[in-house]
Length: 101
Image (cartoon, rainbow, N blue to C red; front, side, top):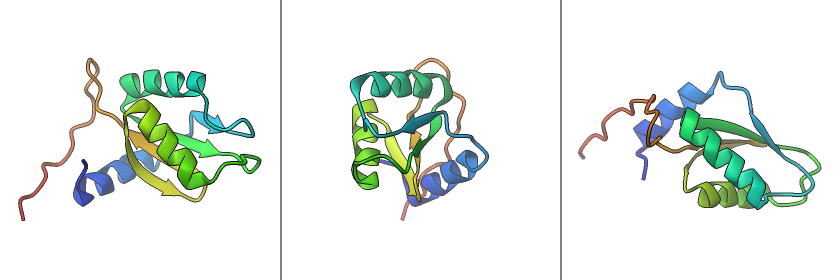
């Protein structure tokens, strides 16, 4: 699980990203989850937009994407989903250390 500090860091990293996937009328499917999973392996942080014509609830879409790709849901803002999953082979993002309370 990500800490608040780590999520804030990832949100700042994702701010300038363009969405590379769109969830439309068909909703979330296996092929989309596979593609997003592959993109996460390469990029670690991806932005996905949910189109206006998507019939599923945006919260359910975000959770389905996170669960399907085994990624962390960093943010759901408006119709934009940000997912993070540390890469096995292409580690790029260095998270801030979790501070001890």
